[in-house]
Amino acid sequence: MSVAFRRESDDEHLEPTFEIPIPPGPNFVTARGLALIAGKVAELEAALLPLTDEAEVKKVRRELRYWSTRQATAQLAPKPGGETVEFGCAVTFALRGKAKTITIVGDDEADPAAGLVSFSAPLSRAMMGAEEGDFVDFAGEADAIEIQEIRVPAA
Image 1 (cartoon, rainbow, N blue to C red):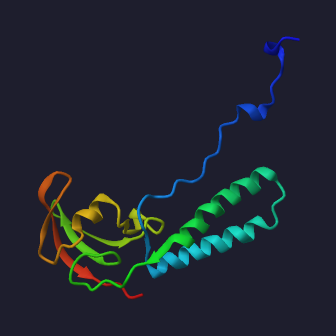
Image 2: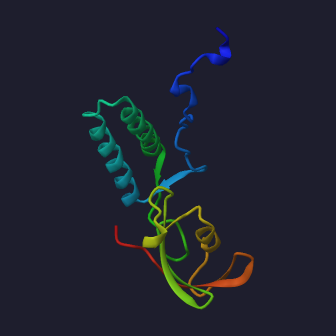
Image 3: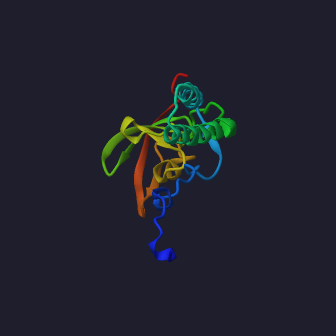
């Protein structure tokens, strides 16, 4: 029989599953971020135990590999001084006249809707090292951001 008429298995047509991409650069975390990562690892380890479906096991193991790697590479950032914008600071700033407050956190802890912005995000990078009252450039616009207040959040 010709190879052209041979039925291939359905598995041969599935898209390959790749590892979850790890953000480049150092894995800085806050104490809260480190606890969230540890919680995620524990949650996935517990979820893996009762699973019997091979596809689900693979899916959970893939996610567990990601979070275990993030836990192993996590570097607890030192507590910020509060004099300049640093990792872990809460910053109130004006962008084009609108006041906003964000806290600069690690990649895995970031949640922009909740005001938690990754240290690697363009907004955070633009403000790093600035002091209260400074104006910084952002998105190609000179003096687009005015730093109004820098706070060190409790724990």
